[in-house]
Every structure is written in structure tokens, then in C-alpha cells.
Image 1 (cartoon, helix red, strand yellow):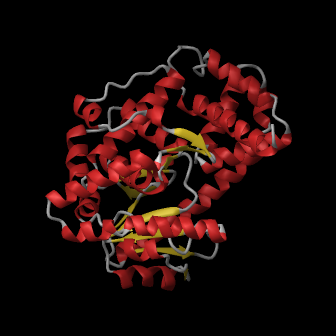
Image 2: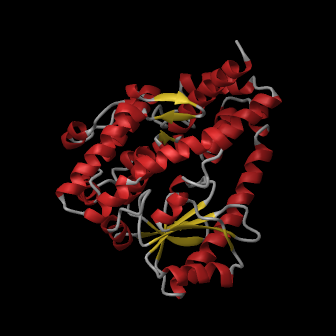
Length: 374
């Protein structure tokens, strides 16, 4: 097996291990909920060389589940009388916790200054992963564009990153703040890859809730809008799913936090109900494959889902959504739905998406980067 083949095989094993660890539910009555599959994965992790350990942690970081995975490994190691396995992760966990502590401090200050400047703000995506945190800090604000930019540049001495074509369409800016390694990405007034989602963005803000994390309180989307934002990102933009998305939605389903009528109402505003239903089906089937847990999704979700987890595949670190015909069908249905609502602004913006995606693909092939486009 060549180097690439071995690397891909390792990624598959690492992802399977991470999935088993972070999706496991403590339902056996034994502390801390050890199953045969989890014990098997603990043995696998205990055999890692230093290089394999680094690769495993890198993948956990890419999927935004590093803290949850390490905590589970250390709990299992302690309960299984192999504490030395858990201690190998101490340094990585300490570094990640320090990174998150610093990011939360900045995030709290940013939210406070934006609100004080008359720019209502909602933290999207980043805090869904708690106790993990995303690779950057994502915000939505309905405030004036210039006022938002002024807050970052005046109070935080931020530098604006160059906007890609997609950023300009989406009305989105990235800020680099001294002392904060993570970029801050702020969507202003609109959501969606081309800024096509206006009514949906308004609903997200109107239904936001307050969430206590660490010593702070942050404005975040309601559970239904959390799923909506994940759908926009995964099913209509990137066409791949991170493990954190699966874990986050799983936790919402397990806790019965989702009002499916509200979810459908929000999804219909952006004509993305088929994408939402498909993501929910993929998540439920993926979880079942690792835990045997069954989520009874409502009939309207099952009937609206366009394909199952069997159509996905693992490649280049992620669970991928095929572009043809699966993703293309979702895009077509979205266009038809928006057309039926006579939302010509959204139709025009979405019509630019195939050309944007093609340019990004060509740019990536030529330069190895699509940042100037996508």
C-alpha cells in the first residue's frame, strides 16, 4: 500500500474511533458507560505511536471534537485501570483549553461592543461544539455594515482580510485581531453562500436565545436555527459533514430540543427543507451505525429526505456529499422553491453559485487555493 493509501486508511480508522468515542451514550449502567466497542477503541488508541497520536489529534481538531474525544478517552482509561493511556493526552487538552479560554474572552468582548454600537449579534456555529470550539469565530449581525467594521477596527485594532468573490456576495467579512489566533467571520444582514437568505437571517435573530458558557452568556440561535445554519453550510456550500455537526445535532435530538414544526417553518423560508430533512436522516443513520441508537424522525422528515447516509463517502478527512446528482438535486429544488415564492433577488444570487463553484474548482486546480473565490 502506498503512502497515500496508508494515510487514507488511517484517516478511516481514526474517524471510526472518534465516532465511536464521541457518539457513545452512557446507557449501559456501568460508569462511565463503557461498551465493548469503546473498550476496543481504547485498546486501539493505546497502541498509537507518537506520530499516530499526532495524526489522530489533528483529525479530531479538524472535526472540532478534540476536547470531547480526549475527555472520553481519559474517562475510559481511568475506569479501565489504564490511566497512563489518558496521560498521553494531557498536554494536548491543556493547550486546547487555553486556546478556548482566550477565544471566549475575546468573543464576549466582541459581542458586548457590537451590541453597545447598536449592532445586534448572534454567535453562529462556533459555540454549537461546546466544550469544543470551532477553528474560527462565526457571527451574524443585523447592524449597519460600516458600524460593524468600525467596532472591529476601532476597539480591537482588527485587520480586514481580503474579501473573496463569495464573501462579497454573502456580505461577509473576516477580521484578524491581535492576540486572537482565530479569525472572526461576521455575516452582516444576510446568510447563505451568496447572501440569498434574508428572511431566514431575520428569523434567526428574532428567535435567538441566551446560552451560558464558562463564565459568559452569549446570544446564540435557537435549536431549530442551529440545524438550519448547519444545513446551509454542509448541504448547500461545502458538501461535506464534520463529525461535530453529527454530534451537535445528535445532542439536540437526544434532548428532544427540536420543534419540528418550527424547523420546517424556518427551512421553508429559504426553500431548504429537503436539505434539512436529508441532513437529519444522514445524522440519524450515521449514529445508528455506531451506537444502534434509533431516532424516530417525523414522517415529514423521512419523506422529504432525498438520500441516505449510504450515498455519502469518506474522503480527505470528511464525510462527503456527492455533487452529482445528490447536491445538484438539492440546489435545483431550492431554486424551484424560491421561484415559486417569486423571490427574484434570491434566484439571481443563487444562479451565480455554479459559476462561483466552477471558478473555485479551477482556481484550486491551478494554484492549490480557492480562497480568492470561495
